Length: 254
Image (cartoon, rainbow, N blue to C red):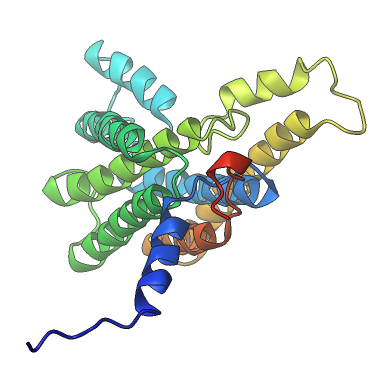
C-alpha cells in the first residue's frame, strides 16, 4: 500500500540521543571547571564594559550602589545613569526568564544547560556585532543594545549557576566568596573541596578582570568581548561531555 517500514536501527539511535539530552548531569570536576571558565569570562566582560559604558554587565552590587548615588545627584558624570538602569533591568530579566525556564525544564538537564548557555553565548556574540556595526559611544541606543545583551546573558548565567547548587562558584559575585573563604573553619586543612572551589573562583574571576582590562587597553574594545564569547562557547561544547547522574537500579531497563 506504499507504506515504508522505517529502519529499525534508526529509532534506537534517536532514542539514545533523546535520553542523552534528557540526562541530569552530575556534580564533578568537569562541571566545576565549566563554572570556573564562566567566571573567567565574566571578569573579562565586566572589565571591558566599564571603560566604554561606565557600568557593569554582571556586578549588580556596584550598579545598585551607583544607581542610588545617581538618584541622590552625586554622580558628577562619573558613570552613565541610564546605562546602569538598562544593565540592572536586563540582568534581573535574564535571571527571571531563564531561571524560571530552568525550573520548568530541569536545572540539571543536559538539554536545558545546552540551550541556556547557547542563548547566553548568542547574546554576547550579538553584543559583539553591535559593537562592530555601530560606533562605540558611552550613551545612546547603541550602547543600550550592547549592555542589554551582556546583562541579560549575565543574569541568565548566574541563574543557571545558582540553580546547579554549587554555591561556592557563583560565576559573578566575589564579595561573599572572599568572606566565606576566610571564615571557613577548615581553611588550613589539606583536603577541603569547598575552600578550593571558592579560592579557584576568586582566582578565575580576578584573572578574567585583568585579562579583560589589558585586552581592552592593548587591543580594542571588542577583543575582550570576543574572548568572553569564546569562553562561553567552550562551556557550551563541554556540556556535551558531562557525566550523567546514575539512575536508581529499578529505573534501569534490563
